[in-house]
Length: 130
Image 1 (cartoon, helix red, strand yellow):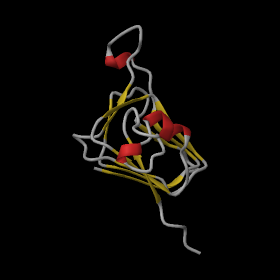
Image 2 (spheres, rainbow, N blue to C red):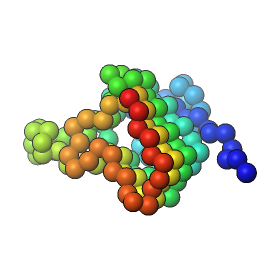
Image 3 (cartoon, one colour):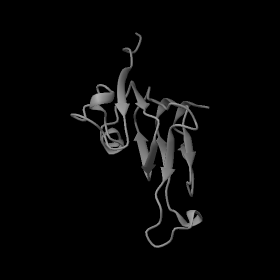
Image 4 (tube, rainbow, N blue to C red):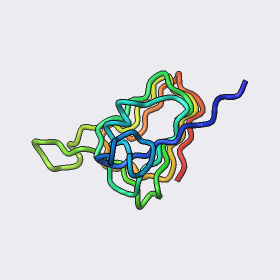
């Protein structure tokens, strides 16, 4: 049995329209996406900078995170409220736990302390492309 075709969702930094993720004019915010992660879904990111601490993905499969290019779609860590030194920022990035068939493509992940992408031993078929 084949999995159903992937569902496409659209993501902007702060969301638009009704925040349903159904189109660019009704896009999820980054937090909407994180709160509503679902298996077998492609998340299309607009060309912008997204400020993020952690995108925790657990017990899901068949997710794709697709940007507009490494110089256009940027996931950037949050600053430490007590110090602007990027070396002191405390953030994680993508954190995959028991997550299978995950693709991250055409986005830059920067200013992360600890890791930008962490994949645990229970996850499989992870692909990261430029």
